[in-house]
Each structure stands twice: as structure tokens, then as C-alpha cells.
Length: 326
Image (cartoon, rainbow, N blue to C red; front, side):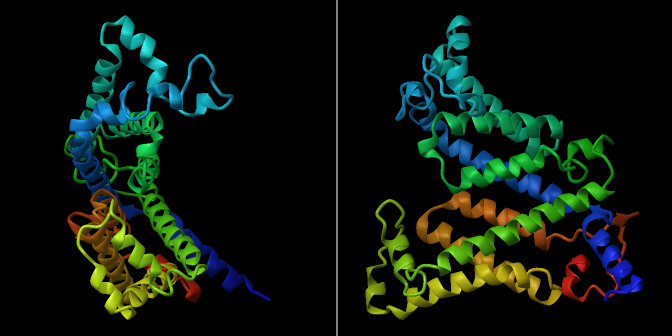
């Protein structure tokens, strides 16, 4: 039976984990990294924006949204075709309207990067990203999904409290706050559960244990960056990489909370994503995942006062969760 003292120490530990004030600096790094990755992605897509998102692009707007025959749930999927009549009425046309939306998206990302009007920039970026990705869902892949989730979190987090123009102007909010702690924890828990779920799913199939998944990934014509046919002569290598990937992702949720194992496991995960960027060409996706890992676990959340760090209190007798000391 748990006595009152033990129960109180657990309660204090849970409170410290979720509600002890923290520095907003990790969230500022998250903001800068997220905006930077999406800006680079936007500039790489700019030359083909009409093909990707245009009314007469690779996917006609009527395929993904037909205003004459809308589905019951179409209201939940914002689409550029909602505004086709408005674009035509003001003389922009579908393509002009598309360029307007895309320009607003880039401008909002620049503001988000600089931390100028951070909250409004977050809201605008999120809305524009949703419209663009829903208009051409066939072009959406991992980075777009994680970008949408990250931007949704950004709507509620104090991203402008540090390393921002808003902070310089005294309107970014407190550098140390409970909201910052909750924000960091959300990022950390999301990553930990995401890697665990991904690792379990991979581990349920044979292809990650026998190297087939790695072989297919590096040999797919649309993703292959180099000739890896030589792997056929060293089958143990893709087998090792596949098994190591599963083990790393499953173990992440347990190892990332301990100070001694946190840095090695996060660096190993960053290495995995660097491999994805280098050998599969998924640079935007890999970069965004690296940003999430660095901001969530490698940037100290220790509160700062008068230019000096303040040591955090470690939850008493909460042996199962030394997590509160991170």
C-alpha cells in the first residue's frame, strides 16, 4: 500500500515533469528549425508550384474537390478550389490565386523564422500549409505530415519568447514559463511514442530483420542516390542496419529520458536521419526530424535568470521517471 509520503513524492514528480517552469529556448530552436526547413522546401518547389498545386496541374482541382458535388466531410478539408470563383472575380485567375497563396505562405514562414508577429505567423503558415497539401494530396509525404503536426503544436506554444524579434521588442512573453515546459514535454512525448510505434510496426515484419527493407529502400529508382547493388555480396550489412533501426526506434522511448543515455540515443537517431537524407534523398524529411530531436532533447530547457542557468529540482523518489531531470 502506498503511504502518503510516497504518494506526495509521486505527485510532486509528475508536477515537476509537466508544470515546472522551463526556458523557451528549445521551442525557439524548434521554431527557427521548422521555419528554415519549410522555407528551403518551399523555394525548391517554387519553380514547379503550378504543376504541383495548380488547377490544371498534375492533379486537377476537380479530382480532389468538386464544388458541384461536395462530399459530406469536404468542409473539413480546406482546398484552393474553395476560392476559385473569388480568384476569377478579382482578375487573378486560378494560377494568380495560387501564386498569391504560395507567396503568403513564404512570407509567413519568413516571419516565423525571425519571430516577428510569431503567433500570427504560426496561424497563417498552418492555414496556408493545410490548403496547399489538401489541394494536391498525392504530392504529400512524411515531411508534410510532420510539418502539419509541428505547425499545429506551434499554434499553442510560446515560440516567440526567445531568439526572436518579438522578444527583442518585449512582446514575446516570459522566457521561463510553465507553457514552455508543457510545450517541450509535448514534443518529447510525441517523438518518443512515434519512434516506439514505428519500431514496433517495423519489428512485426520479417523485412527489417533480414535486410530486405534496407535493400529495397536504397535500390528504389525514385529514391536511390547511389548504386548499392554491391550490397548483394554483403547481405549481413543491410541485415545489421535494418535490425539496428528497429532496436533504436523501440529503445528510444526508454533511453532518451536518462541523462547518460539521452545524448547517444539522440545522436544515433540523427545519424539515422542523415543516412535517409544522404542515401534516399529525403532531405526535407530528414532535416525536420533532426530539428525535432535537437530542439526536444539536446537544447537545455533549464530556466535562465539574469543570464545564468537555474538548476531544476529533481522529483523526489520518482525512480521510474528520472525524466523530470531533463
